[in-house]
Length: 476
Image (cartoon, rainbow, N blue to C red; front, side, top):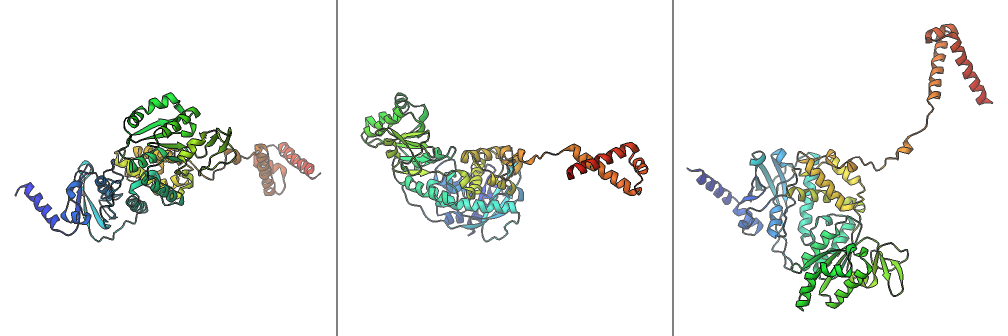
């Protein structure tokens, strides 16, 4: 019997079983899915072959890529050889269409065969209850299941920066769900590094995927340069009355005032067929040109006192204020950091940037206590640094950037730790203690005490007299 015939016979046995079975090749791609897997998923599994089954994939918005990613093995498999995980596959709906169907979760045993570049992973559905007792692996598996659940529920806004269970993240996702469902001018307000640009791009693709998108750096613009930067979109809007276009303006509140006026003019010219998504700091200023005064712009776009340097003209505030998204600093989302860090790690590993598949407990503790002054961007950079230097399948504190692993939240400044002491007084006190011990041992015989201390009798007497004089001065 030839090898090919044996393999076909093995595949027939798998297909005859009522247990879902699939195999993942050395490159992380699905190479086999059984007939029972097709029944469980409710799709033609041929469409999943050669797709990556790696946590953190996909690199595309193809629903089949996203489904394949949910079939990946749990953390720790490469080291342990076998592991069980409750898999929660989901098939995200395409933009504007309902979900295909509901897929039930399934307990799956993963088995590694081979080592290194020849590794093959088999996944077998069934009833398994042999969860690992290793704390790091238990934490990683729990976070992985939470991430799978999050991806299943929030596939329409599944950018990593929105992962989390905190009140701030839930509020942000609620606003993003609204923004993803309607084409409207939009304003993002948040601190530097809050991933507003990636979220804005995702919102655009969710509700206007075929619409041209132009990116503009606000601080660099003047009216002429603005026209030159968006000329392709303007030409389409001019040529066709049905054409639409969107511009995302970075640092909209730092854009020169004349460029802001010209942007408003363009929107008015094309009757809102030209959409503006503005990325702003968390507290820009309204410049009311009619009253020639400035007021603070808080998150809800109401006019208050205490001006701040960045400015938005009132017409532009009215435009982007129709729908606003407030992004909270990462320091106020401490509860979300384990999920955020793990989601970033999944994405980096899926992109082939390193081997690490989980974050150890000690390293995770360091991430949680760090204040993240540069917010999500700094967390992303920290995980990218760690996965590139971690040699194994786990990230430890030693793999994190120095600023994070050396941070101590309750450490006092060095100046407060240093106290002034007098070395001479410490030495005098110790010397007097030795003299008293020697005198006690020799029943007060000063000559014998001096010999025992290795000094002259006259030096011993001078030291005793100096001590008596010091005590007299203190008492007087």
